Every structure is written in structure tokens, then in C-alpha cells.
Length: 219
Ligand SMILES: C[S@@+](CC[C@H](N)C(=O)[O-])C[C@H]1O[C@@H](n2cnc3c(N)ncnc32)[C@H](O)[C@@H]1O
Image 1: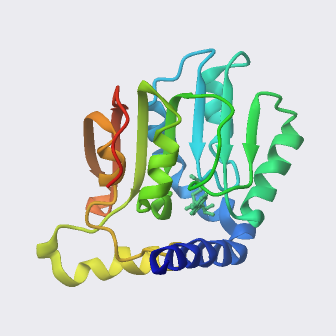
Image 2 (image 1 turned 180 degrees about the horizontal axis):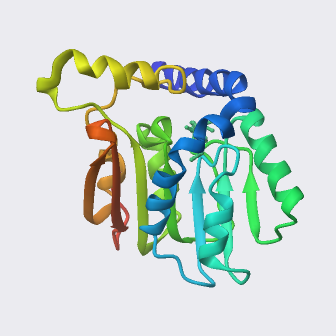
């Protein structure tokens, strides 16, 4: 019961934080577009595939994901913040994209219309640090699917006070700002061949793996 309350709080905290940030989100995310494109390239998308955008925010990844899967493919996405999702919804309407399925819901409970061939976790730290969210998503992904992840992490422990910087950068956005030592590990346990490189002078990471052929048992 206590854990359930804490989790509800984390979702609510995140929704409140993004209420204040949604309007300025696209402008603030512009400088990370090259990292986004680098992460999406790791998915090696092919025409006709079904790709999932986890915690899609305002839908900034929709266009490059659509480029990857083509008109015959499908982009699936979900986002729990109504304020962020409203921008994603408007983006799809404006562009008249017919091959984007998306909904405003939480990672812990989302039900996808199809199993995904590829999955993007782009800067979705609160989702990546929530076992129920990661397990719900990964159980709806095809075995062998490519999984690409990008986000922030701490510098090595011996850099000491330098880690105030990633913590401060995370705090306005995330409900788990101090959980930055191995932020990829819940996703990695669902993957074979998980490989990771550091970005942003060690304050970020990009990683990729393939969804294991079997379900991973609950922690
Ligand atoms: C830093 S933004 C990244 C958005 C998008 N992935 C991008 O690359 O622009 C993190 C997003 O995760 C969403 N989020 C956080 N926790 C969530 C959850 N449990 N379920 C669904 N979305 C969540 C937030 O509302 C926010 O829009």
C-alpha cells in the first residue's frame, strides 16, 4: 500500500512538473535534437515496421520515426501529461499523419494496439526507473526488437561534487532526480547485447539492446 501511494505521488509530481514546462518544451529541447536523431538511428528502422515512442512528450520524435517506418509503418506512442500530450495531438492533426496511434496514459498501464518491432526511450527517466512501467512496456514488445535508450546519468563517483550538476538539471523534470547511477538497468535486464556509450562529457548516455526472447520475471 505504501509503495502504491509513493508511485501515485511520483506520477502526480511528474504531471505537475510538465504542466509548468509543456509550453516551452520544444524550444528547450532544440539543442538535444542531434542526440535524439543519433538515438533513433540506433533503431535501424525499416519501412513497414511498428515503432513505439515511450513517454512521447510533445511528439518531437514522431517525424523522424515516421521517416524510418514510412507510410506503410506505424508509430505508436503514449504520454501521461495532458499538457504535453495536447501538443503531440495538435502536431499530428496539423501534419495530417494517419499512421500515428497515440494516447494520453501512463507507462504502468498502457495497452498497445500492436506488439512493437522497435522501441525508443528518449529522456524518460521516471519511466526507466519504475519497474512496473518498464515491465508493462517490454512485455508488449516483440522478441528481438531493437531498444534504444538515451538519458542523463551521474558522472563517475570520484568526480564528487560535480554530480550536483546532473541532479540540478534533472530536478525540475523528474520525480527521481537522485537515481542517476545506473538509470538504464531496468531496461537492460530485458535486453540481450545491451551496449552503452557516454555522451555530454559523461553526464548522459545512449544505449541499445535487443528485447530478450523470453519474458523477464518480476523483480
Ligand atoms: C523529458 S520528457 C521527454 C519526452 C520525449 N520522450 C522527448 O524525447 O521529447 C519526459 C516525458 O515522460 C513523461 N512521463 C513521465 N513519467 C511517465 C509515465 N509514468 N508514463 C507516461 N509518461 C511519463 C513526462 O510527462 C514527459 O513528457
